[in-house]
Length: 71
Image (tube, rainbow, N blue to C red; front, top):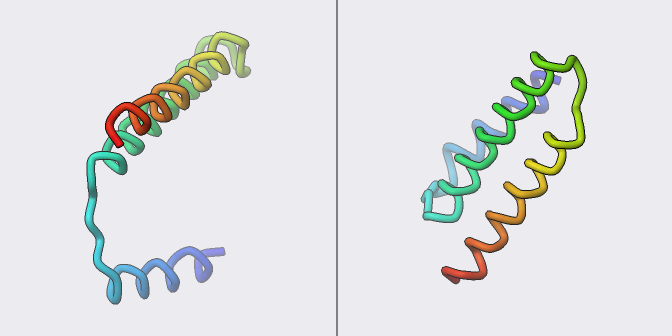
């Protein structure tokens, strides 16, 4: 598993240009927010509850809305 995740990534980093535009930054921030929701949900209830799932759907919808509003 380590081979599958390190070798292709190192080749991609070495031979492609990485340009973070506003969409990738927003996607990254929303992904971190979704991870935080997962951590909090598991710490509080030891399982994923309906409010957490609804919040993930809202984060996804926020990104889609951002893309359509600014593209």
